[in-house]
Length: 255
Image 1 (cartoon, rainbow, N blue to C red):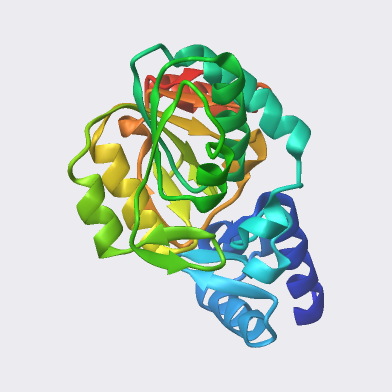
Image 2: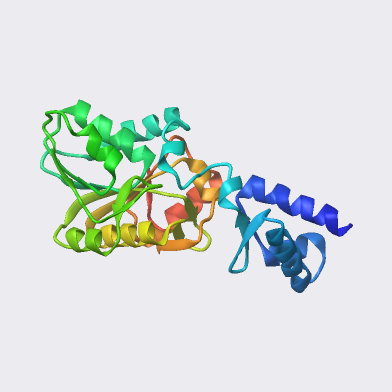
């Protein structure tokens, strides 16, 4: 196989799986791991991928399932996001204090909370969520301030974390960029977003991931948590069988 053919196949695998690993590519193409590392370095130089520890992921600008810009994600896969939100609302009870992180799926959940009439406290650092609660509702809404992050239309950083330290949440609902069950990692692109998520998880009695099943095949660069911290995963449908088995091993409920 010519080098160009191998690069084309690697790119195909990236589009199908969201990530590739050096060891697996070495076995697939029957070449040394050092040869694969050179392939990935060459492809990164051509801006076809981004190398990570032990492998590579698609560059964010080419990623088929995620953008760091909230405005670009609002109207993508809304049917699936609404389905997830309709399941998540059943977990919320009157009197709960809830954290909604930066997630367009959580925008749909916020709408469900308003329509349900439940008397809860919602805390978030996402301005899009705050804007939904500008009308009179049964919800007590608290917006965490800090340094404004334009692409995420949210507040992040040390000031946001300081404000969050005062809270203990009954439940937090977390958006996900990548969920790697084999490596037991939850990942996002932005380190400050990751630190916020990590902080919220530590202050929550129950942690739920609101995510489409395809996110099991994605991988980002900043690790903020693991599946042992998660109570349940709320999806638009059942994950692949191999993922169901791994989730059972971690004692994570599939909703």
